Image (cartoon, rainbow, N blue to C red; front, top):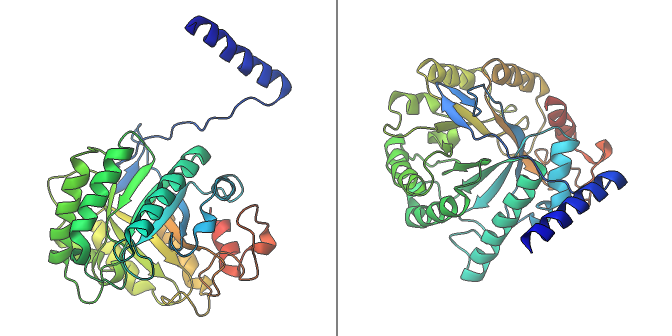
Length: 325
């Protein structure tokens, strides 16, 4: 019986090729690792991820769909997408009810499936914001990442971002204590996936983290966030200091608006940042895939499409970012 099934499968493939409808399967992406300050592929060659971040899986779930992610890959030439899972705020993973939590996990599962099929790397982002201190929901984070790492340990395209933007005066020692517990949970299931660690002051003080990085684990990187309308040469100086001390950096969120997500776009400063990222082969993820009425949204607020976007559907920031890919 198995022999006949194989013949039938071969017939379907030949039939599909002949008529131009062969089934398409995304090639398995190279497993990533960290070498020095660089993200590298399975052959040890430097890799620069370039992509976009969703804006809250509870708030703009409509953009997590197969056509949207295929659009990001094929039309925008990006190679990564960030799934932003808010921990607090409205319908946050840690503040909503059990049904909401289940729905968010299902959305993550679908997002990873769609991204994998589209040939994209996925950053699974534990998006702390108003909670400020990652230890606020430390137990939930440990459970969540252990579960996700167990489920996706055989995927080669998943990166885990364990705390978005520690803020409110949260110290590096506090973040570090949290990170060690979450990293341990992930490594109990997945020995190799790249893990991104937030740094103090809204993921800006990478120079502070560089003085006392986490020891005992491989494939760790530290996040640097910037908005060119607010952050310029002073923050790049911090980044240069961290790199000089061999701290691997990953820009898991950025924009060229003000740090609030609104305000005027600073393209001049944005170009300086892109030059810095290119020269140092630092990966970057633009915020955010939505039509929210703010200058950091990639789509015009009048755009109701959830995929198949044309250039006219993009905001000024969206047009600028897509050109960088």
